[in-house]
Image (cartoon, rainbow, N blue to C red; front, side):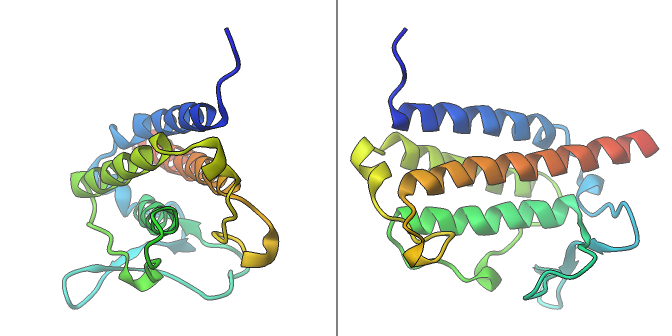
Length: 175
């Protein structure tokens, strides 16, 4: 067996990472999303217009709040939407413009839509594409590439997936 190309390896790694997250997404109950495991949490709050807004601070608080599954799924949607914008060379969305659909299947569907867009992006990458400079999520002068961005998406998705899984398991264990 020969070694995979960098685009093929990136896609394989993404598929593995997604499968780990999907295991938990498929088992979420709507009540899991807004469950707060402790007194210091970041979550999604209903706004007067009928939508949801994330708890947020421009500088990370100390101590860091525990995010709820709701907040984590919004967070994934935010950074992943912006990553896709950069890859598609579209103007990147502002954080406040990324709307969370709410607790339940609508959020899982939203994330599945982002997955479909991302796999389309990955499937179109060449070695030359991976070598292009990327200014997201780092400063433009960091000297990093699209390959770094793709690797970061996999790492961030795995981290957020593990957080979602741990919260789901903790809530189930306390039931």
